[in-house]
Length: 229
Image 1: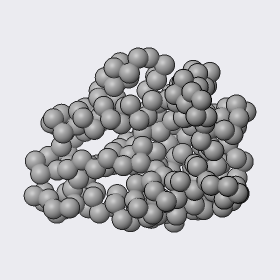
Image 2: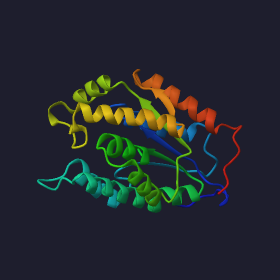
Image 3: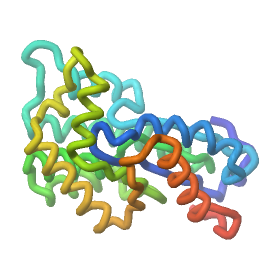
């Protein structure tokens, strides 16, 4: 991943979080199309667009096991947590950290907050254990900015039904409404605790995209000095 940037300048790491159906994929694509011409990226800076699980070759194999496991291969709750941690460790070491060290931007669909929301608040696994695994998997790396697409649970459910049609939900989405309500509450708590930027996602895609762009311009505009590793 060659770069003309000064090796001392660290790139920026931006994450989109939210419950299934909130529009993350749509907004990720919109930001990926907008950012290269936004003036926020320094000359020679590349934009790396990725996701969790599945941002690496190992992650893609783990994604299949986690979301669409064949037969009786569905992981139990603790195994599920460890597989997400393995995906994240590979993702950070193989893709995210090298890109940031080279001065590039990384834009990711989900990161460690999703594990806290889904496996912690949703599944009920100990938050202290999840925090330990997060520190191991990320080696202390945290996003520069997390955009939380905040969508009411009922609207998220309606969107998922429209999206899946007869295909049915994946294994995580199939956890039921009570599970997803706990996940939604977990995201709200995380947004407050970790200083995430909440974006009202109960609007058409373009106003949501405009809100995301405004936040990035405010956070990373010309008035912001470059970050040095």
